[in-house]
Length: 417
Image (cartoon, rainbow, N blue to C red; front, side):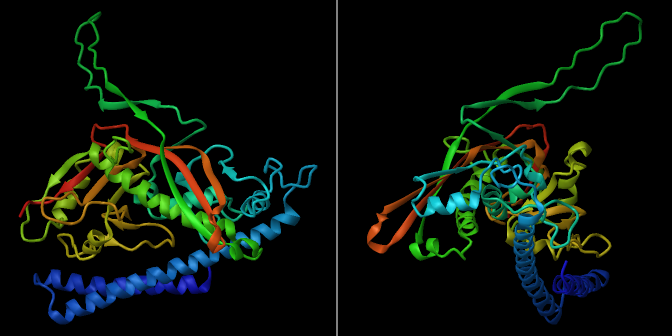
């Protein structure tokens, strides 16, 4: 971690401690914040947001620098096969192949698929010098870049769902738990029959819905060998596909689209405090947390998820001792905490309104996301021939469904007034 990132982190913690003292003072004196305190609080929240933006930029720059250094170091460090390609690359130079494809020298279709087992819950970056993962050992390939950008805009993909990658797009059926076994009975006599308590299952079908985007690129961008064409197209396609796919993973109906997790959960608590525009209070959050049983609540994929505006309100909520329930993360790149559990923002979560369901909590590993094969890229020189633009079409297929409807995920139901 660079000194700049460390200073930003320290400043972030200092600002939060100052802001927390304002909230705690008001709570101790059992009063609302004065207009002066409210103004100071608002300025501090804006500074926190500004620091978060700067931190994100610094970490992204450090990651790019680390990836570039690793790529150049790998030329002299990584073993090669007889053809001179890096080991484990399958004899492929993906960057060279992609640029040749972009120039029209290698056909009109380019497919990039992941190599080896896929576990997107480990797609994190610890920053420069981090030893928490292997992100700096080998250059990031196109597929991983696209998935990383898809995760950026989807809170569901950040919350640790189970990701299945299949070669084909045929319908995939998986067991779906609708009820667990009841507790065993007591047998007091020898030879008595044991009670039966079977769990209840049904079958969930994961299909392969198509998501795509058309990207038009200037010819100069392709011809300039100094441009990171792979990274640019991965970012554009990943964010565009992620916006639609991420929306469906939250609220999709399951008809010609994925089944969003919000369509498979029940309310863990219904708010009773009126006049707050539907915003949850401290007691509501505690009740929602403990409406989830311990095995799900203790999962590594147990997250809070809400839209950004809703999360902004969490910063003002205090517990019965006047302590804020929202905590900034002390680890760069990790989610902030709400009541000690990680909190991610998803722009596609329902808005904070009376009668709405703006907050969800639970074990997101029980939500299955299917991705089919790789990413298919196709190019056309003719689509915008008169403007000297090259058109690229990126296509990915996927689906999603909640496989455990016994209560692994629940939501907060806002009061109607």
